[in-house]
Image 1 (cartoon, rainbow, N blue to C red):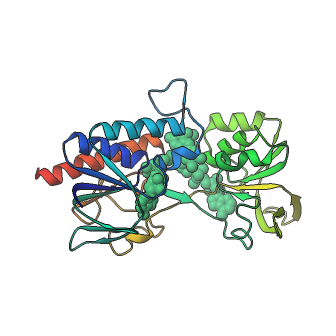
Image 2 (spheres, rainbow, N blue to C red):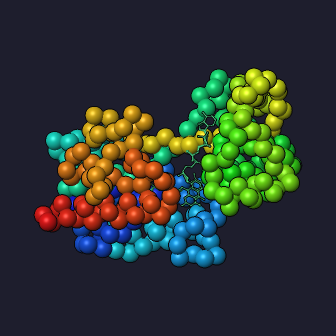
Image 3 (spheres, rainbow, N blue to C red):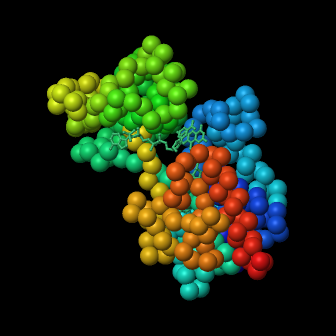
Length: 302
Ligand code: FAD
Ligand code: NAP
């Protein structure tokens, strides 16, 4: 199959690009390896995306973006991109290969790990990276959230709907999360913040039993019994397949110019996979728009 524009990733950035490129009458294919919507389908209520003063649920916003892209003729297929053949402008997926004239990469990011022994083994057995997916399994139980950013704080608040107690374990004495989220967490009776503390090791055989936590100031280590551990310590860009294809920084983020063009003239990139300071739906959508307009300009020669 050959298309004018291929977009890798069906999150907010990729779907925005698709709306613009298909509306400009360029044949557009979105290749998505999991589910349309990307990270927004694992979030609950979105309060800071303009146009929805009462908030909107993540999956509903994803559905609306998909509907808008399809309305202008975007095609969507479910497959995983493995390789880009630069010489032939071919996109090689797990199941097929596609040709295009311009490519937009919008592969987003995936939750970072603590990289501790037993972390992988106990994932799905008490350890989780998605409160929306797994929170309900911990009704009336004791859980901990690791991290101090927006995700950790929002998810700690969400987990109070199920758990009887939520510890928020943060490595510093100040949260990184937005002030309005911090206020909610400080006021919540079910949440206890454990400051200046890291997880030293994870305990459990068949399932999680708890964690040994270490206070960074006193050096003291204590055992914290837990039913669940939710890890929200940032994200890693999904760009492994782009090594030696486009310029990446040392953490794997794609380097782009102010037109969202990569080091290869026919390849553009948008959203959380790009090197930029703020990762939000609004910034992903902005990038998606810029990348699409740049790809259109590239194809039309202006
Ligand atoms: P993603 O949403 O990550 O989408 C990328 C897509 O690409 C995914 O669907 C993925 O499966 C696909 N993909 C990756 N690699 C491949 C491949 N090789 N082949 C095919 N497909 C591939 N932001 C806000 O503004 N407000 C919020 O309230 C908010 N809440 C959040 C809550 C949580 C729990 C999380 C995790 C994030 C939240 N964010 C929020 C951040 C926001 O969701 C992201 O900034 C946004 O989704 C980034 O969009 P994206 O399209 O760049 O990437
Ligand atoms: P983040 O902002 O990068 O925060 C990661 C947190 O994890 C930080 O508090 C960091 O500590 C901590 N951390 C990192 N590595 C750690 C380790 N090895 N051990 C212990 N703690 C560690 O990531 P995020 O919260 O997932 O947010 C990602 C992006 O999505 C952000 O741009 C965020 O604004 C956006 N987002 C927005 C919303 C919203 O707008 N409502 C909601 C969710 C996410 P330090 O603080 O000490 O660095």
